[in-house]
Amino acid sequence: MPRINLLPWRDEQRAQIRNQFYISAGVAFGIAALFTFLGSFTMSTIIDAQYARNNLLEIEIKTLDQRIAEILDLEKEKDRLVARMKIIEQLQQSRPEIVHVFDELVRALPDGVYLISVKQSGRRLEIKGMAESNTRVSAFMRNLDKSEWFLNPDLEVVEVKDDRSGSNKNASEFTVTALQVVTNSEMDS
Image 1 (tube, rainbow, N blue to C red):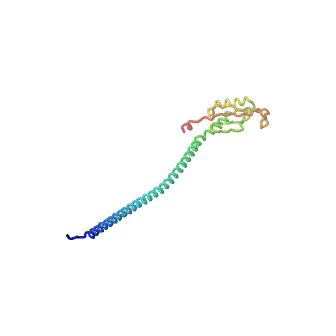
Image 2: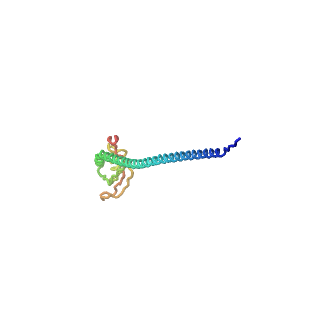
Image 3: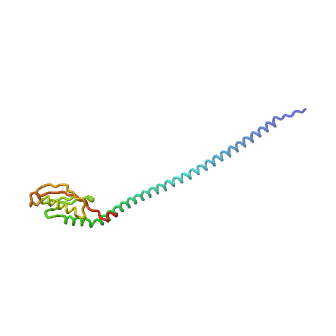
């Protein structure tokens, strides 16, 4: 029988299969590398786009924060102006009241009594004056009590001192407190 040596053919076939494997592996590696590069490039593009959106949002947020701060400043200014307007309105409404208060003080003042000072803190009036006698201070207190512009007159201090005018040596220096009556226009506001 003739002997045929098949080893070179098998070696050739093995070399061909090995080459095909290497080519397939190279193509597969190339395709994998291509997909990895494309995936990486796509993800990088998406991330860059998101960073651009985030930066745009941050810029817009800063702009809106500035606008909000301006709006808050304007609201504070508005509140301040409204408060001023209310105070001016109250002063306009109460402007005739002080005339009535002084008019009523003059009407309540008996002969022999004169005032040194009148201080007002809110609705509280502090009236300091001199009188020829304690009886005249009492008359002044009664007149204040009868007045429709004063409430709760209270005698704080009565001291016997020399009269500043020099006409009476035993004058009484007094301090009276009273509350000014709140008018209807102020109760409404």
